[in-house]
Image (cartoon, rainbow, N blue to C red; front, side, top):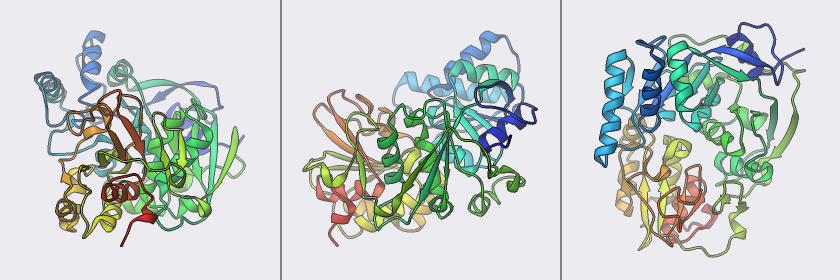
Length: 422
C-alpha cells in the first residue's frame, strides 16, 4: 500500500513502515507550541503530573500573543506564569514586542520543518501544514503530557484530497477559495480528516496563501491541513531552519489512497464572504445586498501577513476610511510590521484614518482591542465569526479577504474589491 504525505509523516513519527487510516499510533513529537491563553492551564497540569523537567526544552516554544499587551491584572498574571515557566525550564519564549501571533512567529523563527509532527495548544496550529508538516491543535492537558513525555497518541486520519485548478481572477484570493471550500463541505465536512491541498493552483500559490488555506482547515473539522513541500517552501525556510529535509520523500505517492477527492476550479470564483454566525454560511459578495459596517479588521493568523497588507494598501492608498467606520490593521508579527513599515504601508493606512496596532491576535478572539457593541457589524480577515467571538453576542461578524475588508472600510458597507473605485 502506498501512502499520502500525512500517513508518511505519522508512520515515521511512530516508527512504522506503514500506517492505515483509523490505526492508533503513539507518535514522537518534534515541536510543541503554547501561548498565554492556553499555556497557563498546561503549566498547571504539568505540575500536577509531577514532572520536574520537560522532556526537551529545545522543542517547546512559548509565545505571548492573545492578550497582548496585558489589559488586566488577570492577563498580567497569566503572562507572568508563562514567563516564570519558560525561565525555570529554559524554554524559548517570544514575549510582548518580540514575536507576534504564534502561527506567524513559529515558521518565521525556524520552528517549523517539513516532515515533522508539531502540536500546539491552539486549534489553528494546523497552519504549519502549509510547510509540509503534520500540525494539529491539542488541549492544554494534552500539551502538558507532551511536554513531559514528548509523545502523543493519534488515530491516523483518513485524507480528503482537495484538487485545485485554475487561475484566480483579479481581486480573488486564497481566502476566497478556502471560504468557498468550507461553504461547500460544511463545518463538519472534514471532521478528523486530513485535508490535503493539491493541484496546479496550489503549486503556483505563495506561502502566505498556503498558510491561509491550512489555517482554516480546522473550520471544516479537519485534524490537519497539509500541502506537500516544494521550491516555494524551500525558498521561505532556507535561511530560517538549520537544514532542509529531502522534500522528495515528502510527496504523496501517485497511487496513494484517499477517502475522497473533491475538485475546485478557481477560474470562475467570485469574492466570497462568510455571513453570521457560521464559517460555512458562505455566499458570493454579489448576493448579500447592502450591509453597512462599523468596523473593518485586517490581521490575525489567517491574513495578517505582508502579502495581505500589500493587497489592502493597494486598495486604500490615497483614499479615506468612511466616516463612522473603525479600521484596525494588525500585522501578524514584528517581522511583518517592520517590513510593512519599510515599504510605507503603515503610513498609507494611518493617512487613510486606520489605526495600526502592535502585532498580536487583537479582536480575533474577543481580546481587549476592537470589541464590538450590541448591534454593530464588523468585516474581518480573520477565521471565525461565532456569536460573541468579537465582543457582544448581539454583534455580527463577516469573514472575507483583506482586499474585501479594505474596500468595505472605504465604502462603509460590505462590497467586493471589484467595486472599489480608483
